[in-house]
Length: 113
Image (cartoon, rainbow, N blue to C red):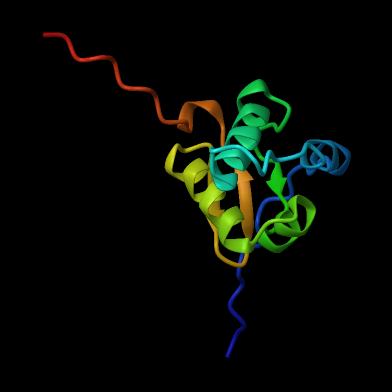
């Protein structure tokens, strides 16, 4: 009986200093904007600006929650927003990776009447 080879995730860059700097930005807890939305906007800005390049592995939900001092559900909601927009791909037990721009959801054109 031969052992099945399970491919490991791609070994892509993970700029620790950049993630630490990005995650040190404070969330406005007095804002009417939900924390998960603020977190998603901060990460989206870093992704769209190129500060977080395609292939970058984001920290785990637990690590992000600890750095931002928020609950894991808040982080999960923010990451799900990014995944829904195609900005990241999430794979259970593997991680969350920034996707390339051609995978990002395009805004819909306004309807004309």
